[in-house]
Length: 272
Image (cartoon, rainbow, N blue to C red; front, side, top):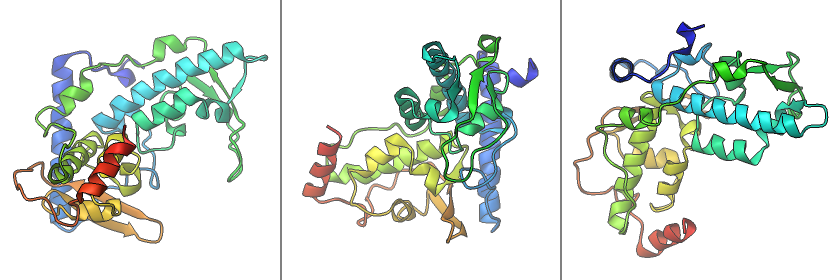
C-alpha cells in the first residue's frame, strides 16, 4: 500500500516523474511521425487500472478530485438520515460538479472510486444504461489515512518552461492565447488527449471565446506545427490530439482564427 500511494512531496521525486513524462511524450511524437496511431486513453477508451499509470498532470488532478469527493461525501453522510448516499447524489453535488470542471481528468468520474478503493466503498451492482446511479457509496472507516496528500506546486512544476498564459487585449492576440492554453492542457494530459476531453478544459474553453468561432477541431488544425489530429473512429467521435511542439515563435496568427473587433468584444463580455 505504501508503494501505491507515492506522493510528490520531494523535489527529486517530482523531477524524476517529470522526466519520465517528458520521455513518454517524446515517444508519442516519434510514433506519430512514424505513422503509428497514438495510445488509446480517455473517455471513450479504457480506464487505467491504477492512479500510478496516469500521466502526471492527470494524476495531480485525480488526487485533488479524490479529496474533494471524500470531503463532500463526509458532509453528505453527516446530513443523511441513514448516513447513506448514492453515487448520483454525490456526483450532482454543486461542489463536485464545479470541481469536475476545474480538475478535468478525461476519464469517467467512477474511475476515482476505482483508483482510490481504500477511501471509497461502493456497491458492486452497476446501474442500467441511462439510469441514475443509485448505488450506495460510503467512506471507509480509515479513509483519512488513504486520502492523497496534494502538492500545491506540482502543477506549477509540471508546466514550468511552457509558454505563459495571458488574457488577450486585442483580436490579434486571441489566437496566440488559445494556442498557449492548448499546449498547457495537452501537457497536463501527458502530451496527448481525446478531442472530446480537451473540450472540457475550462481555461481552453474560455480562450476559444476570443477567437473566430469555429469547431475545436478546426482551431487545432490551424497549428499543424504544434499539434496533430489522429482520427481513430470518425463515427464515434474518437479523435486524438498530440502535442508535437511548444514553439510559438511564428508571429502571424492564422487568418481563420483571427476574430474581428465585434467577435472579440463579444467573447470578452461573456467572461465578465
